[in-house]
Image (cartoon, rainbow, N blue to C red; front, top):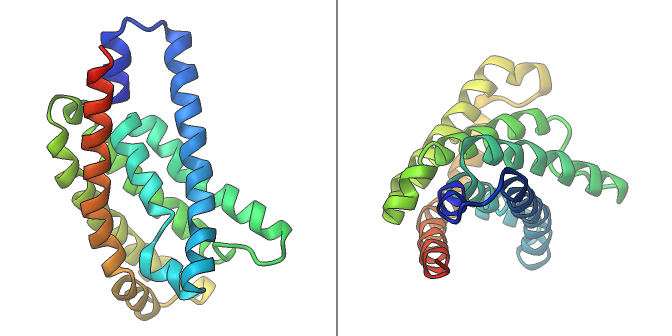
Length: 191
């Protein structure tokens, strides 16, 4: 979506990269900070229930497209892990980190695939977000089935986490599209 807005404004390549870099960095920061905020309010189980890191990643996909969204999806759990490791309680845990990187990459890529179409019809953020959520969680289960025994992450545990996070996914499937629709209206009004 953002690429289409910048193209309509005849932004230079340098300007496009600068704007996308700033937006991506802000979304990574949000993806790192939001889980900390949720854990403060809702405790350790708040992250599993509300999946706060997923929200900025879904926004990144819809707003920035596949490539930049993937960057946010991959970097968010890595940056979060490195920062929280410095404080002695890494999140996500090292055994969960590779799974989360791939899962969030899928979230970003699927929602990002709709990016250009969302510019023309912001309501497409609803199916983009829903399909991204289903795809990402499906990949998580598949990865756990293939590699989970190597890191003590059985499919039954993954399924329990998915059930616990169902309310968070539903909330995001509603909240993210409204954020994208609002941003679309805001960006279109700046013509």
